[in-house]
Image (cartoon, rainbow, N blue to C red; front, side, top):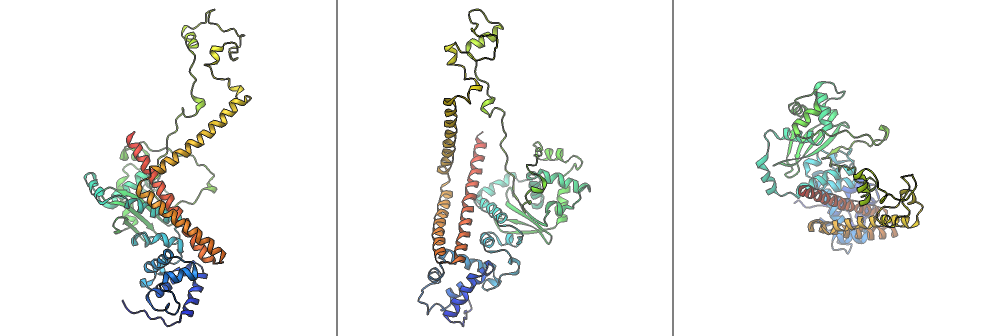
Length: 444
């Protein structure tokens, strides 16, 4: 590596770095560059600090993890990998987004734009992380049941299966009845990423934009360029009955076409569609017997016998007046069996107390379920969660110190790290829950 020449003194260097830390997040690449300068030159010789990590911690409250992150961002996103200038294609992303993008394949990063939100980039990262949990051997075993056709064909088949509504819309596009063309239908905002899992290939990202269309294998990072015309052609091959797309979808995927759900809010209140599309989770079906009030109480033997005979004898006829709906008051043996009248429940203090106890019990059971889920967590996931909890605690201490010292930028960066760590924990738990549900479904 060529020798790095840096002419400024330690005081000049420190003043320059201080100014960068006080600016907006757009200076993060330059911060990384200046930290690399301190690492690779003798600029700290007059400071008394032995390492750049020691210097950053003492002077700015930046720990070695953040130092490493700044340097990594500079390595990956600066011009030529060692510069104080951000590559043009990554301008406008901000520190939080680039921190997530550090862990994504370069081919995926090149397909992203600043218009993607942090949560959308987090979704992409979660999909990549899930694929990494699948071993190469498992992918090789999938070769036995791989259908024929090109990779693009299989990607479109998976997208059509995961998004039946898009299948129907593309049928309208092919018929020439849709107001939008294929690109506008698949990417209404001008860009969108579809994430599907293709057997024997792994998870594939189909990344669409006005300038390019590409498929990226999240396992290998391999990128395959395509065009919207080729994508449309595969849709035309897949949809064989454009006049009856719902029926066609059911025939292709061997399952009933899902019923459309009613909109929960007015159109003006609907959220902006996400630029990232993953497989939609299946919803649990509600049963009519779920509410307690819907369950018919068991009748006493005497009533069952009466119903069977059709009439009452003088021996078993209860001594009440002619109103059959009035509760029995003079039959002790029946009072032990029959439930209390519904109309008296609200007036009866003991029953109300029992109701309160029932709610309390439900809360306890819910808590136990969560606790059991934590105990059943995969050891690897548990280790990852514990690591992030430790990082969060460290960051909280760092935030407290930074606020007392009025180091606002340091506090902001540490707070952003806390948000990122919590997002990671949520993603790990969600993935574990999905695996748990899949396991239960297999047992059923």
